[in-house]
Length: 133
Image (cartoon, rainbow, N blue to C red):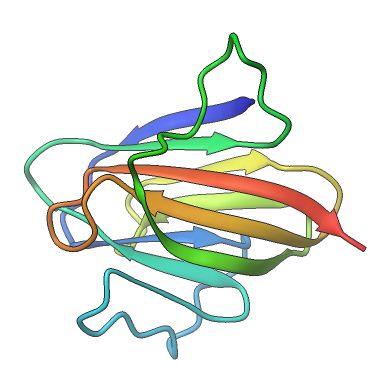
């Protein structure tokens, strides 16, 4: 089930998602389409040429409701702790930030998929399952 969606404009080619606290300086994307650390994921996106469409989903999926795009490529699939149960999505320059409550605090299983991995990505589907016990 889709629980949220936002369009974000970015000047820099990196979008962060994860816990609502500060992104650690140690999170380095380098040349990869995405990279993760203990609390956040950095995703390479297409900057300054339009909005980046971000959609958040939780299972189970209603057959009548929007679903994650099966043609997107998964760039991150793993656990992320959300200390307050909220997930934040924002540009690396911290100009734009979207926060949505995903549930109770805890460790969530998060899958991030993009329409085109790398510098041309302009759509991201995030599936949040959990919190895991």
